[in-house]
Length: 260
Image (tube, rainbow, N blue to C red; front, side):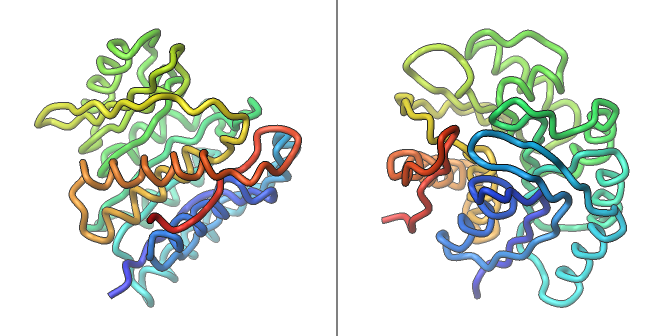
């Protein structure tokens, strides 16, 4: 049976990130994409110019409508924006027994804030304990742990600290660190694994975090073990960077193609 994947995230009018990237990713990887839209952004490759939030009860209603009728095999959570939406999502997912991938979206590629400051505490308290894996980049890891991260060793320590907040695993992404090599750390209570590749230098990297978390959720929903799901998601993102179509004047979107 085709894996049913529910993406809970904001809409990106430019199509490179958010719900649009989630749908493309899940479809390319052979899953069935469903959505619960949390916000509508006015956005292109140059940045976010406006955000219109969806009422929390409508967000929760979308989640329940999908789960009650079609069913779900894995869930990806992206942009939530505020405390009320976080609480609505947490309530709607209470008792859910499928893999949940939490991408703690806080800042857009162009620098716009995508979450209210007071909502970070709610995320820590309500969503981290539900998450099978959380996928912070370095700025998000710093914000969530309130620690300095200057190299891969710092990142590993911060990820281990974040693990203590409740998620079953942390995939800390090292793309923001200096250097030619990129290391992501997968940290669980059983230990940690490093995934290292040469960085791909490109301005067409909009939506990498959304794409990775959606690919990870899809792979987990299809039954892959977490380390294998991480490997597959990273390959999908790297392929997207290498095959980016070159659209836009700013941070352009990835290319979305099935894996070989």
